[in-house]
Length: 125
Image (cartoon, rainbow, N blue to C red; front, side):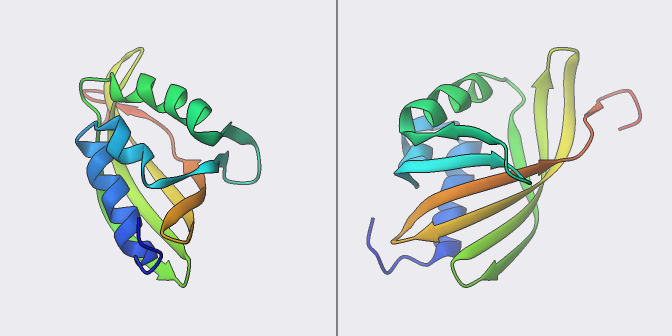
């Protein structure tokens, strides 16, 4: 990916690949040594192998789709507020989340996630 690619373009590309459930295209937006965290610090995955394994499970969900509610760009940092439809063990539902991406040299170096409570469809959605 060219180094001049803006952070916003990189994050948009990963969102589109996420919604297409295209694991290879999605992973290509991440640096090989990228890290994913819970917002606040707990490491969730590091490097393409761990990130791929973590995401492959998610991409198998039949209802998976992220809808961008708002995006803010602060230089190399992109903050997305999303409403995500998921297939939870209890059934389909939704969850809001905030994603904080740090993009360097045209690739996501780190991603941190803050998740809201899950709401199952038919139970207050």
